[in-house]
Length: 154
Image 1 (tube, rainbow, N blue to C red):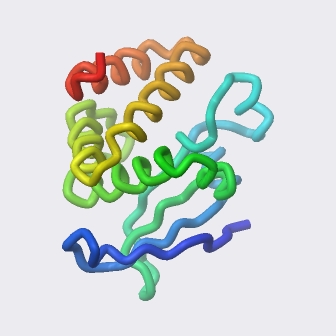
Image 2 (cartoon, rainbow, N blue to C red):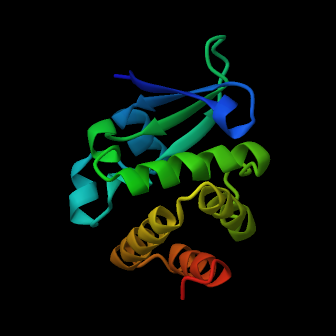
């Protein structure tokens, strides 16, 4: 079930449009290749990291940020704000479908940092590193380390 959780106006950052934050467990799990939410605990995946950013076809919104669990997403303000600003960065630095691009992710991290979310980005990258190790995912591990290096966090 899709839940509309929050609306954001982009006018405060000099952009036009509105973003809706939606909770949709099924779509998030499917998008990340998981059949069941129990895998999150088994593989030590922090569900706040499982976010998606879409351009909207709905007349009321320009963009959607889709999260797995909105309550958990809001549990740490620094992480929440950093994720939102990182996703807003994808308006200027879009991610290609099924393409992993470290440079794009770093640019979006920098957008978040420019809007005061340095500590949140540090936390996100630490959680992502932990998840990459738990999943034994070399691509994610190397990409995360490179992001930390380019942002001078290591």
